[in-house]
Amino acid sequence: EPEVTQTPSHQVTQMGQEVILRCVPISNHLYFYWYRQILGQKVEFLVSFYNNEISEKSEIFDDQFSVERPDGSNFTLKIRSTKLEDSAMYFCASSEAKRNEQFFGPGTRLTVL
Amino acid sequence: QKEVEQNSGPLSVPEGAIASLNCTYSDRGSQSFFWYRQYSGKSPELIMFIYSNGDKEDGRFTAQLNKASQYVSLLIRDSQPSDSATYLCAVNMGGTSYDKVIFGPGTSLSVIP
Image 1 (cartoon, rainbow over the protein chains, first blue to last red):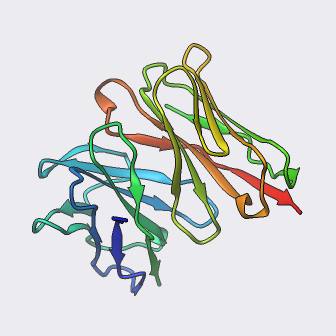
Image 2: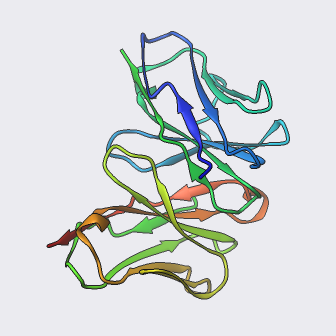
């Protein structure tokens, strides 16, 4: 069964460093998403992406965040200068069509020291 | 502020009983509604997707949607210990935010053998 994959599973970085989280969405899906979940808190929407551009973003997704689909299969989230409060699980999701079911990857645990 | 609310629980039911999980949402224009299951340390796993008023059944799970009351519920019949998890209600926003999904805080379910 097709699934969303994410790498790495765990990323440890120093405050102020740049990190890139990678995702491979399900192959025939057209809509891509990033979410984060701080430990013990709810899942929070960050950004949605369709047709090579951002279609929606939350107030969390400020100038230090960016997304890219560098090729036909990968979808990346870049955090330019990490802060302690960026420590969280980051989930990628994909969907075949807008407002349809979103399937989540296993997540990347980001730890900022 | 558009919100999705759930009882945090924990909700405890005996094995074989029906578990009833509830969710309310504030955006009257919301279009699509999802129930995810999340085990501790894992990513959300899609259980149900519903967009029309009424009931939708899939195996032991039934989702019920009432847009007039801005209410969506999940019933789990013949609850099993393996159903013990946190259940997340998620709502696709309406209007121009069609690509934004807001999650509730989740309800923790414990099925007692």
